[in-house]
Image: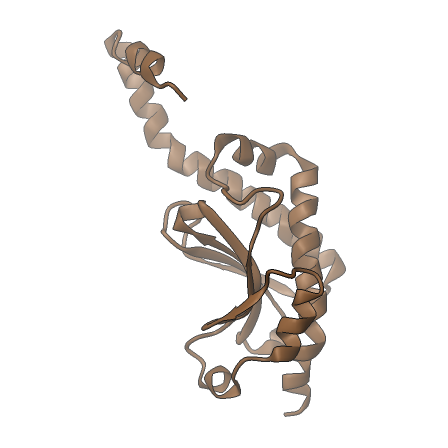
Length: 186
């Protein structure tokens, strides 16, 4: 995008400069408000298919460098999550099954090939990482959620919501019996 006309408009007069400063100041809050609304709707949609599951977040979306939206079951003792991970302040979106890195019980357990293979049936690109049983980049409906057109779709486009929900639901359903198995043995 050529920003010269915008720059020229801003510096035309003091009023335009003040408006630009106000918009710049409000932009981070507006963006965060949009994503929080989207994630609230996403949680409500997924809870209909996953009764008893809970949603939580860590860090602030688009404000902090890394943040996450977590879907889990109380029986999993905050050790495993279906996560939507915002890397690089939302420039890169990942999702999958994450593990609580501070929990000794998770460290001792090691990675589960069963979880990875179950998720790979839905997302072939899934790989295990240090704190992920299965992690993949979100390619659709978008990989970079910072762009204004993507923020607008998050805000208004039901198809965007459905596409994200379908991917997370597939991961949740594929991994659930295997993670449940860890706790049913105890």
